[in-house]
Image (cartoon, rainbow over all chains, first blue to last red; front, side, top):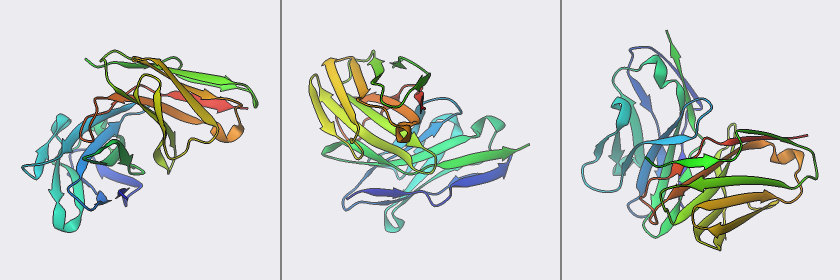
Length: 113
Length: 113
């Protein structure tokens, strides 16, 4: 069965600092991997996704993520965060013959001015 | 732009009431989903619909039912609301396939007293 682990419930970084949010997945075959962001009071919005090809994926708002099969990881990164990046971030995993995806429990990002 | 709308942003109901949450999407998507979001638990799938009148139970269907009479509309029904159903409810739609982006509505925050 698929599963997703986001080890960090909360992360605090200073504005302008770099960011890395961790995501580990469990799945037997090549997974489909997603990062979604939820701003306060909003629904979720897709940041980026990976299903094949280049393991470094670029997304919206300056985010990127790298798929590392050997580590079963799909960590989200941003070189310099902005106050508007304060939100909750969800990693998710999907599979070839399943229309449903599994979400991690989320990481809430706090930004210090 | 894909748009998923939910009938209410906030809802307050009494224990035992029948509650209807409505979701409408305008992108002719085959798939629609209802999730429940609770702090520390992430998103949990309640029900999934892959076509009109077709549905599949998710991870936590107990106490809920759904209706999909038209392709664009997916309703979540709480037959007899209970306090433990106080939560944020998110609707999403997507094309078929595990690698497709899910598009989310803004959510309905339900309080059951």
